[in-house]
Image (cartoon, rainbow, N blue to C red):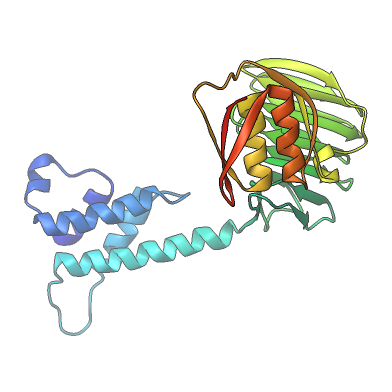
Length: 298
């Protein structure tokens, strides 16, 4: 079997075990690396591309002909894959914004809509298709002020929020999704369930359970340097403090995590924030260094 046929069949998993055993181990490693890189692309290498690659590699020459080594084929294949990767990137340009721990970030979208990212949160969207499809992927928490226009979608791992023109907050955490509507109408979807929110209403999705609540403010507290909690366990409060103040808190094993907290703590004064938690949960913080604390029973 010719080298180029080995290449095409190997990249498309068509080689038999006997044929595969004929390839030197060092060359096989090169091919496996190429195939792995292909699998990580948004558009994986398919049979048509492999055939094209084999054709390019075996194009007839007018002058001196010589047999290329399998390593040379692999080198050309790698170059072709780089071109494929570049083509995918150019056709799907992604814009990403990230607010680091202990910070917040304001982002202006191409249509004039505004996004305010909370600490340790990220959004990304396709720049090329934005005028046709206003879709954002969110990890963390963000407050949106959406200009009227075509449908605007916010996708999270736990559900999708769809609006036309409105103001709303999306908080995506490890165990829950909280969406609050401040203006207009918001649709929240998860699997086959969908809920419409109007101003002053919020919905929490946790463990496949929908919980509706009311809100009496006109925008999220965190945008006003306040962190709001509703029946929140201590470990979740601690996680929010770590995210907002960019600190690390180690919890002593004897600390009772079964208690809940409802209320607000400042997002711009760590001393007061820690004091509120100490009084509410009957615990104490011991500072280890500038950004590290240990939480113990009082």
